Length: 361
Ligand code: 13P
Ligand code: SF4
Image 1 (cartoon, rainbow, N blue to C red):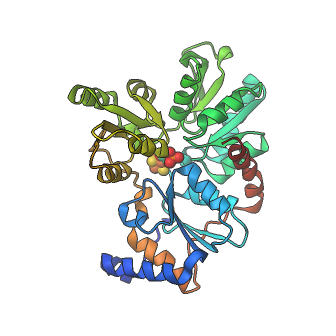
Image 2 (image 1 turned 180 degrees about the horizontal axis):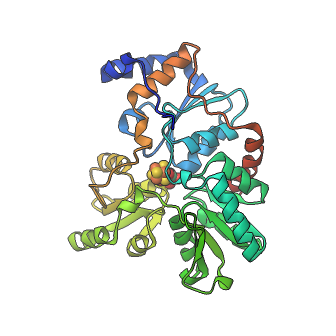
Image 3 (image 1 turned 180 degrees about the vertical axis):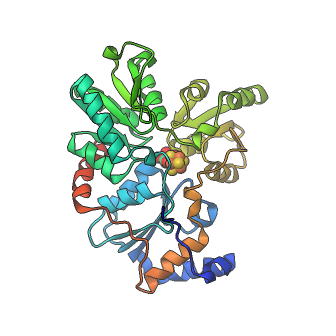
């Protein structure tokens, strides 16, 4: 398969950090508000430093939708986020992903063919379903959901939107993150044996209960970054720091979430630490780029990674200073590269699922 990795001209790999930083600052000055740099919380410090705005997936989608001035939006995040920004922005606004290989392995766990197989088998068994997709999915999956009356969710609004979905009188089919779906439904009072899991490799439906009673079907996708947090990490932290608050991303597995004090989006994690008293103890289960920044930002609090040895999101990490400098230089040189353009028909249908979410958020 052809590699999507954006290979840079030699200069960008050899230039010093200071030189590249200065180039970016100069370009930002020249382009003014015609350029908007958005960065997800998982980006490295060297990228976040130049962002006009940082945020979680919901905030970044809202920021992209609100901005009507920027002609170029350099999106420092992963592919599905840049696609979402393209769908929500005007036709004259270009969304640029500095490295096209910055995908999301979880989003890639649902493709159109697999979705069609699942939908046909599941609707044959259960009748009509309401599809809901985590924003970590391709534009094409969002389009499918939009055409079937469903909605997207992010980790910060999943509870509201899944509640809405469950009240529509149909079984809900949730993709692709089984953990987010399971954790949120559990909080909403749905017993685990009323949740089924769709195994997209073996095309099998599994449940600990009677399938006729299941209220939600969860695609068995997962995030490889959040799989790195296990119950032993939680137990170790509790034994070492009895007063610790343990907060994890909702993409962590049920067992880890059950032993933690709270779970939620990257923004909820940030705000929880920010709003806590000095001297409080925190152990955080999410990408270590973000955790490292929280540790540095709050020296008066005791903040730890729940697993300091976990690898950060390798896709997010593909966007680094040289790629950012290159992407912005291309704008200045009127030779814009790595523009993310979602097909018009897909965009029209995906926007229905996104608008539903934004109206319920
Ligand atoms: P947030 O919406 O919480 O930022 O999460 C996005 C993501 O991809 C987490 O892995
Ligand atoms: Fe995807 Fe996981 Fe990376 Fe988030 S952390 S972008 S879910 S692979």
